[in-house]
Amino acid sequence: MKALYLGRFNPPHKGHIHAIEYILNQPDIDEIIILIGSGEKAYSLKNPFTGGERLEMVTAIVRKNFNIKQFYISAIPDINRNTIWPANVIDLVPSFEVIFTNNPLVQQLFVDLGNKEVREIPLVKREQYSGKEIRESMAKGENWESSIPEEILPLIKKCKGLERIQAVGKTDEIEEIEHNKV
Image (cartoon, rainbow, N blue to C red; front, top):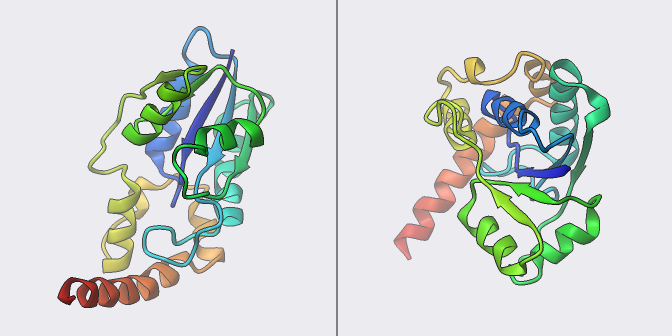
């Protein structure tokens, strides 16, 4: 059976590797589609990396840690219409029978669609393996490297990801402060 694993991978971290391992260890799963959400978003604190950069990072993880023959990797843009988003996903990726996600909204949208099984993934070290926490640590100049697979570090350096996050972190912080004043 083919599974869909959806995430923003901003940046990919060791928790994503654990999730992929978990999915592939399910006895009924023999292939996986890794779908990078919000593929069009970049250069913000929430989505600092481009869809292409994230695709390159996820590919590096898959090549180093898994049998590449079992995978499809793609990116998808947001359409900002929750009621039709699951059908859009189904239209843009290879066919699949089950979706793995811990996002409550994505779970509900696929349950409401009614033709795909939805499963959760056990979280591992969530306080350490959280994209939001990693991005915040990068923005503050704190330790973040231990949460990232080693094959991703040169890619983050290549695209000047740390510098980007620190720069947009300042901008986002200013915008958030100004927004809260309104």
